[in-house]
Image 1 (cartoon, helix red, strand yellow):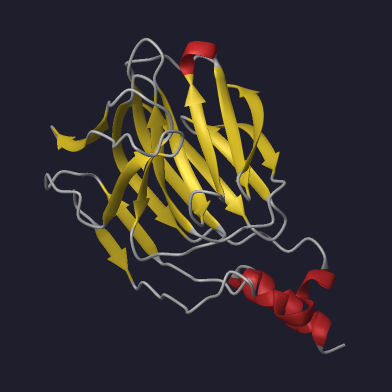
Image 2 (tube, one colour):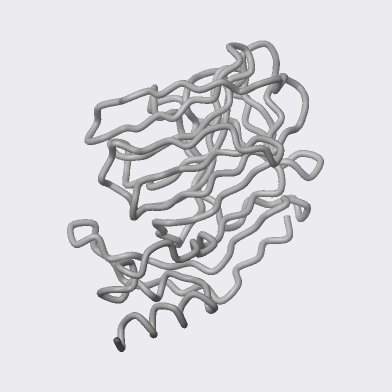
Amino acid sequence: MNKTSCFLIIVAMLFVTGNIAHAGLFSDNFNDGTTDGWWLGYSQHTPWIDGNWRVQNGELVQDEPGDNFIGLVEGILISSQTIQIDIKLNEPSGYGGVTIWFQGSDNWVNILVYPAVGETWVQERINGTDQLFRYSSGSIQNNNFFTLKADVDSDDGEIDVFLDGVKIFTHHVVSTNRVGQSGLHNGNAGGHFDNFLISDSIPKPLNNVNQCKQGGWQKFQFKNQGQCIKSLIR
């Protein structure tokens, strides 16, 4: 696994106040044969069933039958982020994807690809109640690796979802619980994971100088901060 943690800055946060914890970068290709840096857990649907997690041939594998086995990166709490994973889902019914904003068994968001039904789902568990949103997955097939990426903006609640580099939809989250642990998950026939990456989201371009107010300029690219400074000194 070459695990990479670049200039991790873990800022103390409380869920009740919404303070944000920042992380520079975490990546894992599992080539070292270990799962260091991960908490690899049980089924969120049936908590007494443990996942069959292991590193095999440089890939993280989980193939215990059941639903929603979650693995989380340890030591990082993050809100806005880019999260990416290469996945191969087993026949006939494996599904899997990424988990964001995990605050315990009652609050999390899953973005998962389900080739058997030709769909990508966003599952939002909010205070123990599930909401499911279904989108098309195009031509993704079981037993073939593909890349799932999500650009997550916690401020406006938008999640842009990409399969093999192509944006397939934007989801607007219902949940207001927008900070927590990130990781991955799968279920049914399970599957394989490789080349996991999580980082702070790429800053958005400046669309409106009103976004510069109250410290908002800090969210934008260097070239756009100049526009903010000009607007604030007028």
